Image 1 (cartoon, rainbow, N blue to C red):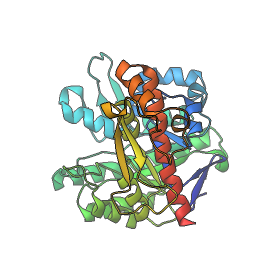
Image 2: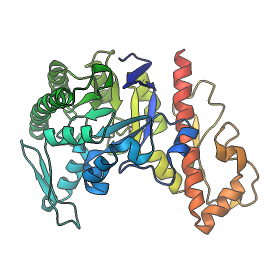
Image 3: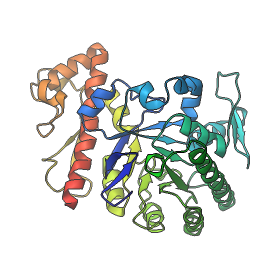
Length: 366
């Protein structure tokens, strides 16, 4: 069941907008599941491409899935790994090949060859006990030539059909009731070509999915959001279907994409920034309108020597456990001494910034 404000998956409700930190191989670096709950995280995104390598599918299956294995009871979305395979193979063809049948890859330093087909991707995601299955897609760079984009759309649609057939086979074979089955999302490719985006979206809608994702790199060469293409892709899908802005997570881009009509967001940016001492904070109360458009937040660079004796919290507007109990001076000390506690505290703060942002957007709709 879906609406613009929320979606219910296997008895769990995900409120929009939802920011999902990347828990690529089953964890968010430096924090645990209780930490994540404490700062308001609703769901996690994990990655089939990486999970099948580490810890390995047999290990996850021994725990009856990712929820039990990771201690995370709430929503888990598993990305198929199409983008990661694309990145690996485009780095060098020695790492693998991509054909109409699927993806064959051999990660650097590994002797073992991995095979990921649309059917295999869905089978693995079911065995991981995921809440949202994402179809395997043929990812491209937005600047790739039209011929390459046409092949990507054709292959993505063919793979999506195979994914949907395997998905239904898994549901029937496992005798899963409708209310207990995971959802399945298709991914819209087409690069920077509106007609190809339209062709891909229409084909996926005809196959039939519970939701959709924006496929391909969403930023231009300068790191700016490809607003026109992101907007067009949302317009191609009826509003009753939830849309996942795959890989979009910068606060400004999240807000803009939510206003365009996207609901679910994921990125490693906030947690990576935290580990590198780049802390986010609002310039004014997050309960107020976020204006001007791209000037309502700022960064605190904790390594700055001006913070050595600063007794203030990172942000007076933040209710995270870090801002409630620790000073900028103490965080500066932890960072300079290289203690791992800094990474945990910084990560908690940045994640709470993201959930405060999504709460602000949610409340402003009300």
